[in-house]
Length: 289
Ligand code: ZN
Image (cartoon, rainbow, N blue to C red; front, side, top):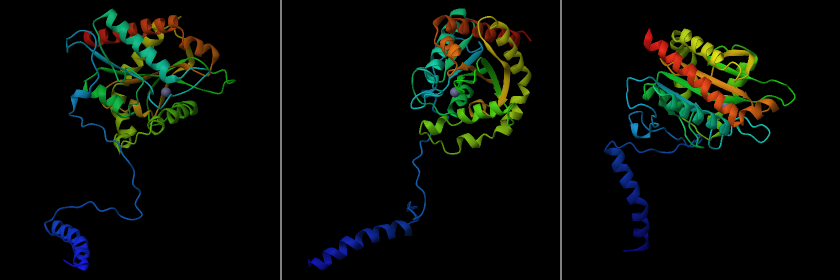
């Protein structure tokens, strides 16, 4: 065979193959010039239960389940203060709370992460929803200018409209976590619009206020609260339809007194004991009514 035939075959064979596939109705993905190509990480299908978090506590599905969500993790450290990172503080508090709830008994508990890993914002309440949790508690810390003197804990609920400019700023910082972690979950965050979810969260608003009141009551003398301790903002992690969801902001990593508290084992124990009591009383009232 001549060289010319060789070349013709090399060019024509693939063309004939592609032509044949198109003729047979096979859809071939063809890149288009000028389009932006973005690498996306798609989360495992919702039916995939193998990746669900472990449930601790009594092996009895009739017992109430709280899902604790330690904020941030992986490449996203969260707020950073003098030598402390929010992702470490939140994990420490979540693990201490889990252990205390298991010790006190009667309540089942699961964590959205148990080590230093990235978990997408939308996946966190999704874990709780798939486990049919009765309460979702996200744990965070905040930062402010080191000289601002702002300190103390707050509780956040979901609202499309923030309760203050500071609450709106907090939500903007928190909602940025996926970008910091390099996670791009197509449509996930926007799919569940804050306004739609707010309607369903509003139904549990009375429950949430009761829970927040219990946290401040049980935490009196042990947790230090901000003067505005109950706030609301459009926090992606709280967009969970039909499940009371609350975010506990433990304090400011940029405030010296708060940072010392957040890293102290005694304070952590005080947090775990008072939060566990608040959660248990909340559930007891739910099952009693
Ligand atoms: Zn945070």
